[in-house]
Length: 180
Image (cartoon, rainbow, N blue to C red; front, side):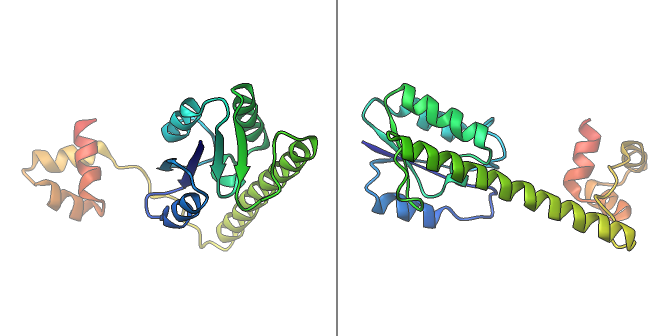
């Protein structure tokens, strides 16, 4: 049985392209989630897919970075699959066959490249933030809500919307401050 796994990093992104590719690859069961892939922790659909697959099955993903962002995580997942007698297929890296030595080598090289790309992306982001800070443009995140100011305005009889307006914050932040 072919079992598919699809992932995007945020709720605003669409899984449609991955789901269509997995369906075209004849996956009989597909697990999909909208969750950051920087680690494997908290990815319940991935855990379910790894638990679901049985000996003789193939786990299919569209790209390696959908499964793991670090070489270590990728190797751990592939080892877990191999220990269960499950093969691994990556649609965009078509020569990927983890049952052969060459396929294992290719997997290692591609995993290292994916990890390298993620590191480079983080470095560029950090450099951009540092340049923006030096230019006085970067403000960073808004400071956390002053709960005492929120309570003081509530004690004056103001409602959540009015408190939010006066403090320049969202209503949800007002209610979080009041409940905390």
